[in-house]
Length: 126
Image (tube, rainbow, N blue to C red):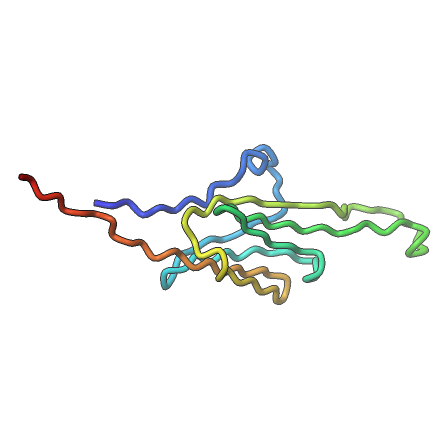
């Protein structure tokens, strides 16, 4: 019996950052993985998605405006702009067929699985 490979393990840095701002849902449907991540306040140009050797890296970076640029005298400032990232190991996937869409503050990444080839061969005994 084959056990399906489902990795999506975070890198160690995500576990150390208990307040990770990039929460996501991952599910499987129609021989594809789907990653849905909420990134409110970001626009498409501030997000990057890369895949190399089975590793999916998602980054979001927002540049902070200085007081001189926006001409504001802040009384309270709680919103911090920073760079966030998540890294997942996916295993055997079709890297050239991954697609991503950003709509309404939600990033959706569709990752087709590689078709598993049965490599089992019966060996004749003489």
